[in-house]
Length: 138
Image 1: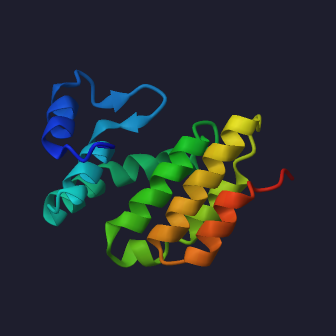
Image 2: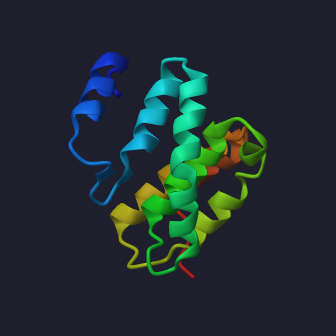
Image 3: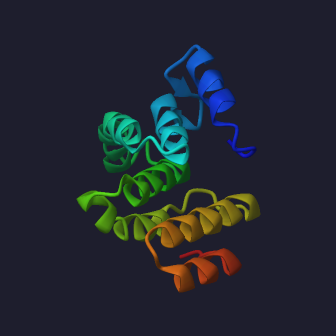
């Protein structure tokens, strides 16, 4: 995907033997992002809708909530392009509240995810600020 080689990305995802990437999330989430990147909005919406209930359930279940889960749900809402996308500002706030074992690496990841979600929702000033200054620990 980083090389914008959508055909190779789609093939790699299709060939991956599991529906879940360990510690990263559902394969369909990444298939949806690839479909959206290559312009297939309908397939992207179908795949986003397929994965949305699982991500929302994981976020509601505090024992399964992780930084990656909140970030994925925030990106999904921001990319979704429907009514849910307009409410994605809740996700950066939730992402900010994930405080498990902060390390410099997780703080940078959180700042990067916040910046991306803000940018996708049109809040460019907050995106720039979020990427420069990781959220303070509470």
